[in-house]
Length: 128
Image (cartoon, helix red, strand yellow):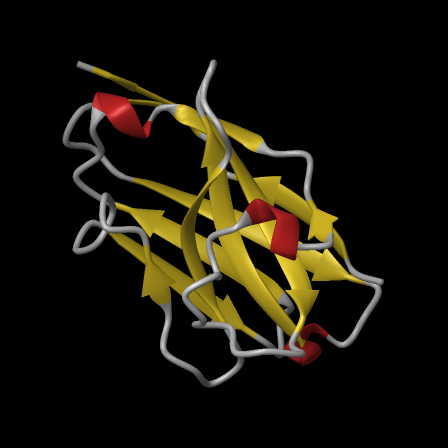
């Protein structure tokens, strides 16, 4: 099993940047598809970005061109660089993982139910 711990959330004004980090432990990190999800109050959890080991990342349309997912297997970390933040990016952000048994970039990558392991989340608040 893999354990995930997020950090790096905070408050920022619109147009600003934040970098989230997820530290993984307890398993061979390279065997997992990993991603970032977010959940705003009153809304369903949604996929933000995901990446496998050595594969191309996938992004939600709403964050393409603004967010970058960065995976470092030797360090067992997964980062999310968020630029040009908007108020609608305000949410709790979660790191998630699943065993790499089917393509990480599958059209189903953004379904939270496909991921078995979750961190506790880190809050991002963007003010206008």
